[in-house]
Image (cartoon, rainbow, N blue to C red; front, side):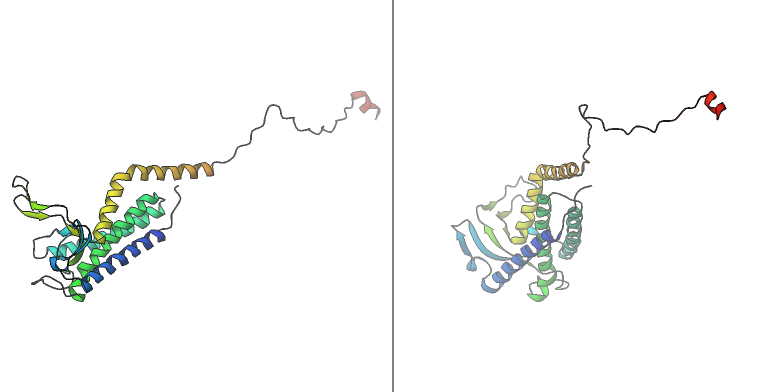
Length: 239
């Protein structure tokens, strides 16, 4: 049986990332102007802070249906609960620490964007015009802009062909999901290896120590048995 791990450190790590994500979004909302007018260069012209509202999915993608945002938010809620349960389950099953850290990042990203979608339409009043309800229709605040390409997609590419695109603008929650998923895909072999090594070390520790008797060991002295006095038939007759 694998050694159980305490899930608390991984949940605390997720909580810290959620706080960092929400704090960054609040500061952007409070102190930045949306669009290019409020853009702040960080490293040259390719890394910038650029305040935009995202009504759809991660990295600026959207769902076109009227209730698409509602479906997306409900899906995020279900996914958030499932990821949290799975993280605790894997920790108690003794999964690799690397896998648990990656899952905690994915959980933090899911919760961060769920908060935006669920509450920002009411708290920040940023639900898109014509939304059936401000609840579950809040727009996610994005601000990290890695600006290294923009232009028209060739028409021969399905779905996106013939449209103008730029590199996506995202937030810390999106980054947590992306890094967590990539870590699992890239390092899944080492995650499994670490898990196996932990199990092997535990099995070795639990192996009972067997004592063997060497052929050169001196035998233990055996006390002599009590002699039995034998009486012959003649002695019995005389008595």
